[in-house]
Length: 365
Image 1 (cartoon, rainbow, N blue to C red):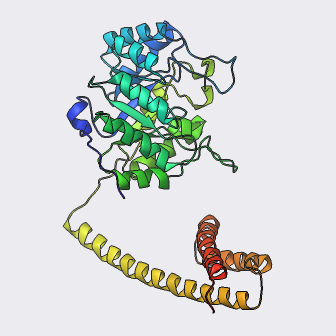
Image 2 (image 1 turned 180 degrees about the vertical axis):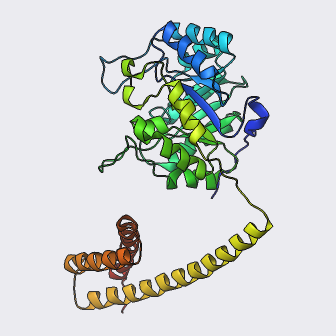
């Protein structure tokens, strides 16, 4: 069931909003000079209206640079005074919230490590109280839509209505060119369930290196995300945290110029042709569902036959041969290996469950 959220449209609370929204700044505030110079360069880019910087940076293991703390907030205040950019920082506890608000931070964000803990989310919401401040919520490290959605719902039920979601990718143990796998299907599902909440992408944490950033931003915008939060540094090679994923303000300006901003809808002729193609998709989906239903009926008969003859459910030799043959056929028809494997895995999992259900039935077959 889709949640019921009471979200104020972003254009009603963010006076600088334009599509796509661009939030930018260094991974970490390191020195006053670095903050001011980076903000000054970003302020020259028309699309950038919000400046971000990490003030508190707890690392996975102690000993690394963990942020400058409260004193960095004064640097941000100065950057705002000199550039007019709005400010956003990450908060992980009530103390962070109080100090950020005391220094005029305009927008708070809750990070991937914090959102997984409902106690922390509750405490942050209580610390914000009835102050009318926007909050951005990053997805959790693990691909868990319920946890992400739960954090959003919790804050909304506490009276926070100026909310935004940030897609920063997910930890994934398979080999991948990305630092955090995009798993686009998860933010897409969040948007389906909560169409009212703005959703932006964090390509820096998804990619982990600057070479993948531009195509990742383009993909996000093509999926109708509302903007980006990207890490920029006046001198990335000298950055104290995440130097490989940060870019210079000039590189950001070049990337923004290369983006293709597509429309959500076209003219009458376009819409007519699109509707024609969608009707064809609808017919094919009906056929596909019918075929899957008939396949599962056969699977159930196989389960009954195995039960009568006391045969195990899983037949690895058959399964391995099926994978080989279906993948080969799919590739010849223009489908990707990954897609076929994912589809077969889902169908096989359902088929196994159907046979388990048959094995557990007590009534005569």
